[in-house]
Length: 262
Image 1 (tube, helix red, strand yellow):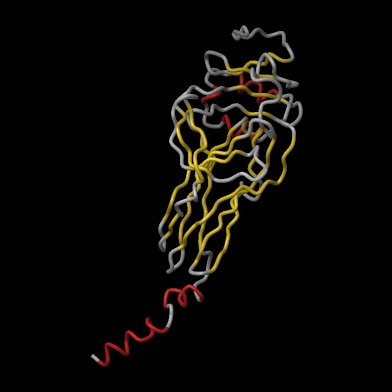
Image 2 (cartoon, one colour; image 1 turned 60 degrees about the vertical axis):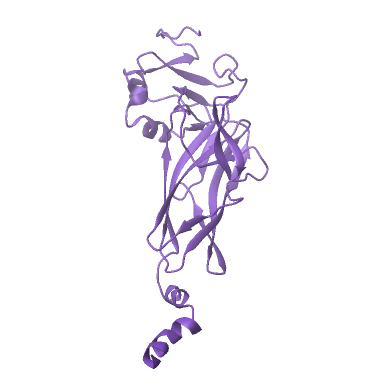
């Protein structure tokens, strides 16, 4: 009994998990992030300035099924195009400490906010659907707050609900993972942002920054009126055809498009 008491004494006098963490190398939390495309958001992209696609890109866009090709998004990203209106991120948090890591807040850090981009629009609208996600940010607010993603029956889509971290935290055990689907939306601006995740390790507050491989995430609202084709203010517009190719309608070209503005 005496020996057992002596063996247990360090655990009573010291916070053993904390001591182990003090000498443990590496980050408290690692983060893997990827852009994902959910059913309700489409694949429309826009550039800051007028972009006249190269011959190679034009041939690709004119191909049957171009919008559904695996490299469609990559090709548009390579010319500087960003998401239109909304961006969805899959964020995977992994804990690397003996103590429990409690993520108590995630908030956008705005790098740039300005007028919507009005260069070249590649219009690939949503095919409808009801996605499942956890968290939403309204980037038009001065200080966007993480909110629960809820389904708005009146609007028939996803809408921000109550504060996400109002009554909960994201808990990570050692080597444990949590996946969060984050939706960022804007109806008024172009926004470049990073995400800052604040967490507690014991009684210490720390944070980790989440970005797009060292660059901020980017998303732009529609430039012009609510009808992005009739009221839009873009220097160049490509629209989706019935065969999932894209055809330029602004400025008008010699080649005819199936799209008739209906």
